[in-house]
Amino acid sequence: MEAVLLGEFAHESNTFAAEPTTREHFQQRREYLGGELLEELRGTNSSIGGALEVAEDAGYTLYPTLAASASPGGVVAADAYDFYTDRIVEEAERRGADIDGVFLALHGAMVPEGMDDGEGPLLTRVREAVGDTPIVATFDLHGNVTEEMLTAADALVACETYPHVDMGATGRRAMELLADFASGVVDPVMHVERPPLVAAGPLQNTREGPMAAVMERARTLEEREDILKVNVFPGYFKADIPEMGFSVPVVADANPEAARDAARDLARYVWDNRDAFVGDFPDPAAAVSQAKSQLAASSERAGPIVLADLGDNPGGGSAADSTAMLRELLDQDVGAQTGVALMRDPEAVAACIQAGVGERLAITLGGKTDEFHGEPLAGLEGYVAAITDGKFRNTGPMGTGTANDLGRTVLFQCGRDDAISVIVTENRHQPLDAEIWRHVGKPPERFDLLVVKSTNHFRASYEPLASEVVVVDSPGLAAVDIGWFDHERMPRPQYPLDDVPADAYPDWP
Ligand SMILES: [Zn+2]
Image (cartoon, rainbow, N blue to C red; front, side, top):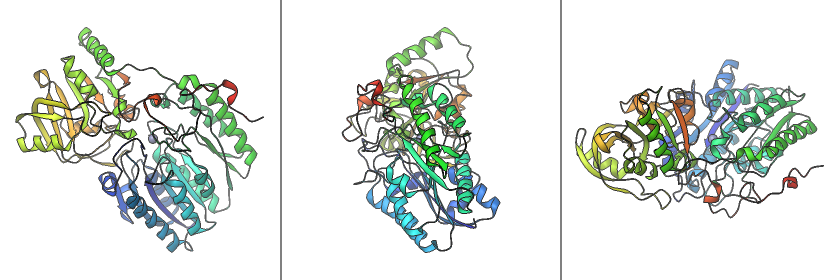
């Protein structure tokens, strides 16, 4: 292989969220055009970062198209989708004769306005532009894999961890596979199996529990002859589309039977263990009350108790302004040093900035986006402890080195003795990296209690400093309970939402 076209276009679209994701939302997180992609992502723990490591070591000529990624949210606005995909496709048409491989970093759960699948049609257009030239794409394991993706790409390579700490490794692996294919060392074929179950978000954690076992089995299956990659996608049920669901697409070297057998082995294992993916977690009132008693019982602890406000995880497309947890903290008067990351509320930010650092004021905080995230907290009195530009880079294991932009950001302290510190931002952002606390001048390890709007990604950065992690079944557009949503288009039946007889799957001989 000598020359590669590469690009990233990634979004996880929550079709239940009202606000579409526009180009401005991509610009808030990542929009690097052309060569900017190389400068900004080289050396980061991202799919493109890993791919660049391999490609630059090997001395390939690189044709960067663009890298665009936005916080999970509503469907991608049609003009934003067209802007990014047209640029990638036009570049593929222009460079078609000069390249011998295409590398794309995708998510897999993108839903553009008026479409059901963002990545499949993009891959089809790139395929039309480059003909038989090999195309390998990386994916987030929360992708909903469609038949069009499998047809248009030569190989799919998904990350293997949740929290996704292996994005760099995923990019490296995919670039190596692309090079092997382009130089005739391998000839990838794929087979997919789709066990009909929905796995609770926190139980998709690959560090322990059922998903750790599934991933271990996937790695063992990769030792079989001709198996190149065993992908596991628990999928993303907040995208209500006909091809939503758990999938196991396996890539083999010119051996469709080997791909099929490995996919079936793992899909059956997942199905046989379906009960292990159903969870029961405390609600906000119970979680806060339990944390309060624990804190009262002992002053000696090795770091804060971390409560995951997963219903309002903006990383699952939620609003990031739910008041459910903060209301409980205030109502139950926890009386501990408590941090809340975060509350997206541009109006409250403006009011605090107008008041200024060191000033006290009353604000109306949160609950402003829609009816799913609680009532606004009106007349909330507090103190403006800090104002920042909201810019910092991840220092934790996930996306290490990548940039974040919270917009203008305020540290607002409220509750008895101003003991509750709330990070209030202009932009939606999943606070998965504890560096967010250092950027407002608060070492996270000094809190007694931390509330983090995240389902599982926070574990990579927070577990090392936490004495305990509690997952909270809180309301919001990222809620853990699929029954909370009103699905109309996803394939049915789905365990545990529907009564699926044990022998309904697998249906192969
Ligand atoms: Zn993901």
